[in-house]
Image 1 (cartoon, rainbow, N blue to C red):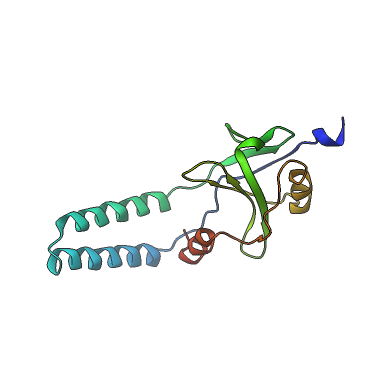
Image 2 (cartoon, rainbow, N blue to C red; image 1 turned 180 degrees about the vertical axis):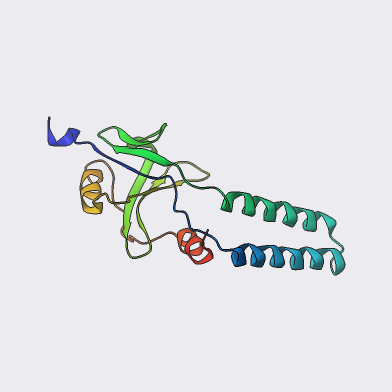
Length: 157
């Protein structure tokens, strides 16, 4: 087998999960109620109040989700994430985040919407992943978390 056809595979959670305390939910619900009351009483905007209520319910629903363990594979054709396959020709570049908060490999794709794919590295060697991906994709120079990753880490979401 040539070095060009190297494959790396590992299992990881499909997303980073933060356990949430009862206080987290109480804070979320309290803030949502206050903002909904503001829209109803001060602004007389029922549509905004209903929309915010729906968003709050969705945030609670998604916060209760736990990640499943998925298989991740990098090979000479692309990236396989569970049952999804992302060919390298649909990716612009990648970067590896390896700090005390995040251990991920991130891809910027050609998609117009939702164009960042983030895969958890778990115990996989980030340098090994980086060296394989350099054969197929350019590396982004700023190897840090995305602003959304930083925000989600702070909000424990």
